[in-house]
Length: 236
Image (cartoon, rainbow, N blue to C red; front, side, top):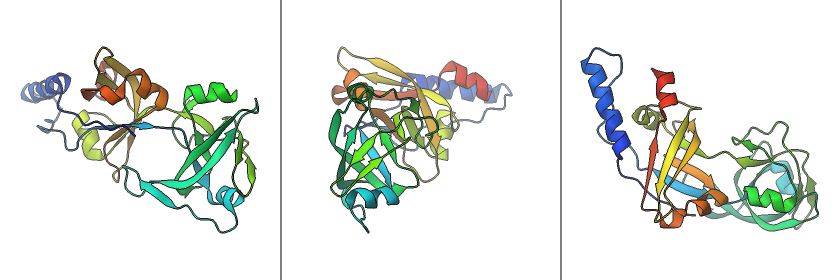
């Protein structure tokens, strides 16, 4: 998993100056903090699966529990030792897809665009947990098979933020921010990074494997998150 931290950008400096001038001129804006409360981390989220306890036991046997292979950046979440095979309608298979824990109420399969093409699935871009009208697939484990009727998504690029992070960036839950990634010969701005606010999370952006490869995240020299003008107008 690729990880990169940021420094304060010119756009963020400009935002702080605008907010300070607004306050001095009698506006309602409050001054932003002089420095980001938390480092910005960008991680590539490779294809993975979240299993319900019911499906975990079908795939791995009665009473099965997820075993921790590696803790993830967010506290309480982990990559499990267990993997499953994902089978699409073309009878093509992606083996050894990692299960992430802990278990959830509904099983959810998160794939990149190239994965869905390989499997022959037409998969919508969704925020995690929004599974209505999504396609299904077949999951194969060492002890059994699960035929999902729904639950396969391409995860929308998103940023996990605490209330302090949202205050600093001037955004709210559900807003869509922009991410500028500077890489040698490949500087890119990714738009529509969805804000997911939670008081218990650390500041972290998730993009999928296709996106990470396209922007050459492995060789990025800086990453900067900023609020587009349309979002600023909405909160004024």
